[in-house]
Amino acid sequence: MKKISILIFVLLFFITSFKPSVDCGCDYLGKAAHKRQQIKNRLPVNSVEPTHLLISDILKMQISKSEKDEIKADPNKAIIKENEIVSITGYAWVIKLSAEDCDIHIELSETNDRAASRVIAEVPNTKEYCNLHAKILSDLVTKYHLHKKKEYHFDKTDNGGEPIKIKVTGFLFWDSGHPTNKSHGSDKVGSVWEVHPVFKLNWK
Image (cartoon, rainbow, N blue to C red; front, side):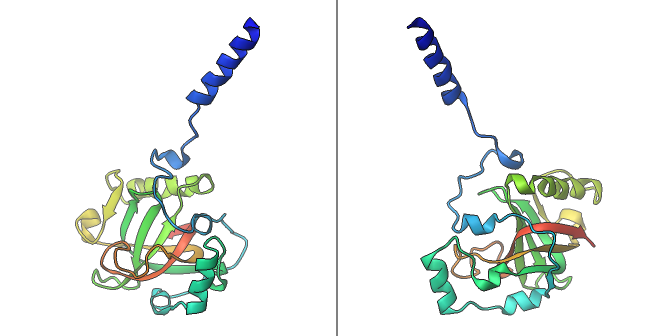
C-alpha cells in the first residue's frame, strides 16, 4: 500500500510540474485567439515550384461570397486559392515578433516607397518553423548589423530608415480574423490576403 501511495505521489508530481515545451523560445505561444490556426500553421512544402506573383497582384485579389461561406462553414479547410504556393519579392518595412502569438510578422511593399501599400507575410511560431524563425532574427543582427530586438521598423529609424529587400515563399492565406485590412498590421497594409505560412526567405 505504501509503495502504491509513493507511486501515485510521483505521478502526480510529474503531471502537475510538467509544462509543455514552448516553440521557438516564445513564452506566450497560444494566448492569441486567432482564427484558422490549422491553415495558418500548415507544414512547409519545399518540393513544389512556386507561382511568382507581384505584390500588386495580391493587393488586387478579391474573395467571393461563396469562398467566404466555405471558410465560415469550415475555418480549418483551405479554399482553392489557399492551396497555391507563391513567391513574392518586395521591400520589408516591418519585421517583428508578434506580441500576440510570436509569429514573425513582415510587411512588404512592391516599391521602395514607405507610402506604398503593403501585404503581410508571416512565419509561424511552431516547431517546424523554428530554424527559419531563428535564422531570420539572427540574420538581421549578423548580416545587417542591427541591434537584437523584437521589433524592427525600417519605415522609421531602424536600418537608417531604409527597407530590406527580400523574397518570401509560402501559401496564400485569407486572414478571416480581419474582415478588412484595417487593424491588420500598420495602416499601410492593403489586403487581408497574406503569404502565411512563409517557409522560405531569401535576402536580396
